[in-house]
Image (tube, rainbow, N blue to C red):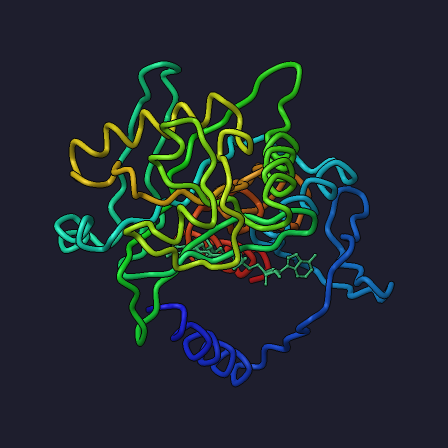
Length: 317
Ligand SMILES: Cc1cc2nc3c(=O)[nH]c(=O)nc-3n(C[C@H](O)[C@H](O)[C@H](O)COP(=O)(O)OP(=O)(O)OC[C@H]3O[C@@H](n4cnc5c(N)ncnc54)[C@H](O)[C@@H]3O)c2cc1C
């Protein structure tokens, strides 16, 4: 639908729901859940106000990954750590990707890398799109989007490595955050931008090198630098090897002029353990969407919300 159309689509959702008697409390942060005898009784807002309810759905999105983590620990809600994805946002001339994106606008390529046998994949392709900066509480990251009414000459996609941890630390979110913080430090609070050719030659990209590059970066608020200083060696190796494989399928994708922005981090964090109706281990507490680790995109986030809604209807009926 394009990011520029999103406010209209969401606005229509809101209007429709209000007409059906739904009340919204926007710009209102939930700080805690009220749980008594392992049963959900409502929520506590940031200003201390309590909202009592028979059923609650927690669906705070990726931005709420840390909050969910704290809530799970505090209330001992059944959950497990899920892997995260760390890597870069890749930007190439749209013409390089056109033969593929004409067939599938968001193609998914899954690659096992040579050296580490890691899983790396393409995700969230934005045809003629724009790279954007994502701001988290204490670090920045990158993402991409496309518009309906505005096009760039480039196509971008996430190229991310699956990171799963076992002992002694299973907390992938904490690990992912520390990588993102390191990258943010190196970039002076901005995403690090490097040409693939510079990464190959073991040198940083500079303002001058970026300026004379054939591919013009759509995100300007960046620091030209060295991605191998920002991301762990294993992830950089996976990205380099993965792009070489991708280049066999999409010639030109691993050119020296290809732009890499770091970090791109996808937190899926703790996955709340739920039953078929999305009910958690706490009675009448339901979970849905990316923040609860139950989805990784818009359609599935919406689907888990619908299942949770139906689950509540079943119980309240
Ligand atoms: C730039 C960008 C581009 C994307 N492009 C695509 C795409 O092309 N295709 C695709 O499938 N997916 C895409 N995604 C991912 C998609 O947006 C998510 O998968 C989807 O929005 C998840 O839905 P959700 O309801 O779980 O969470 P969200 O949509 O994130 O909604 C969660 C809401 O909860 C709020 N919240 C969090 N914590 C609290 C709290 N404590 N109290 C009150 N409110 C709270 C948040 O502010 C937010 O409004 C993109 C994401 C971004 C950022």
